[in-house]
Image 1 (cartoon, rainbow, N blue to C red):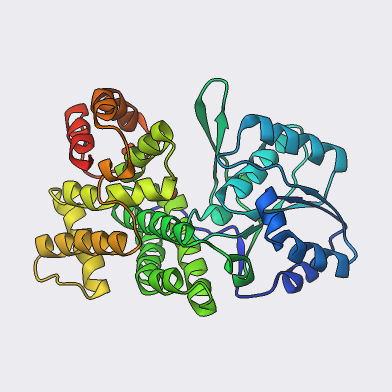
Image 2: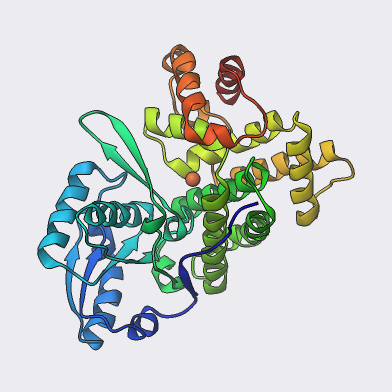
Length: 368
Ligand SMILES: [Fe+2]
């Protein structure tokens, strides 16, 4: 079965000042974006660092879907300042940028650990060994995977998710749910990853609408922080499946949010994968745990797809690709190419049900 370990020390519901106070920090660089500065979230970390008399600098030029150029800029700042640690403050983009900086610094022989403070509940990047960087010139997404990039600490303080817009709650929540469901049902799932994944699924179903309806619900935000983090731990150890392969293509081609693309596709993929006995059994297990109608395996799998559809509808996530505002002719013409890229996506290997080019084309047809 192999080894299961969680490298990151996770603090949930604890203040940033308290956690940073436990360390003997001297020099810190905060890796973030300008919106975090505007929202006053960087100020919270600065106040803590000032109280602790830590010398710090701020790099706030992280981009959404971070580019190689922006990572290089951050890297130059880090090389000049030589901090003991980096604080990555933001969504997946900020944390991924810090990981990429870590990765390049390591190549030059200096390792600078990351303290991740996620400001969204979705990617799970605070506990994973992945980062995705975009090469704008070559129009390429460069995935980096390195166990050493996993943040040393993750601070899940609800003060940082207090101002999340509804659309980010929805997209992040459904991304985390997709991580957990795919992790639970993929090839390399094991007892440990499934335990984390199942708990995450229950936590997301219980809490995402609470937070969606009322961002002031602090307990709901704490629970969502934990659930998306647990989903991250699960999929980092087990891998994912074709839902992410398809969503990567849709998101990349048509510049749609990663979480939203996953959410749109999820009910269709559950139905597609249900024809595989083992996968259907696992969907059934999830449905049973959620208390959904699940007398037979088929009914259980069907119930899970319906539950996701209902959740999507409630949070304003489109029910098909067409509703995402993607032109039909352009889309249909691209189906063979998109199916090929999805088939080649690393996540496809994790899917239990074997998928051919023809199957993938059918999926792209179906989701439109
Ligand atoms: Fe994802």
